[in-house]
Image (cartoon, rainbow, N blue to C red):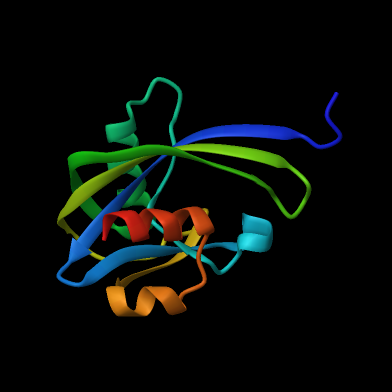
Length: 140
């Protein structure tokens, strides 16, 4: 038996662009040591849900925007120890997405509490998960 709990999660995320800006969301209070860090919109798959449907649903929930999936960018993983000692293994599916419409708004009582377009030049100054920084470095 492991000393710390092990958690594995499959999630989908999307990169939405507006010129030189990227749509980002801020991690809310549940996030332990990650609270206040910025990440790409997205989240876990529901049972029986396709990754494409999950990223569309998560964008609507977290940002207020409707998106279309353009193409698959990568499938990767994030294996790390969380602040509470949990051995976390996140498997992520990353898509390029296009915003079709909607109105920017933060998620209410969810996993994120802020949404905003961040210019590429300002991304380095934003606190964010290492895995998200790696995705942005590879795909922007």
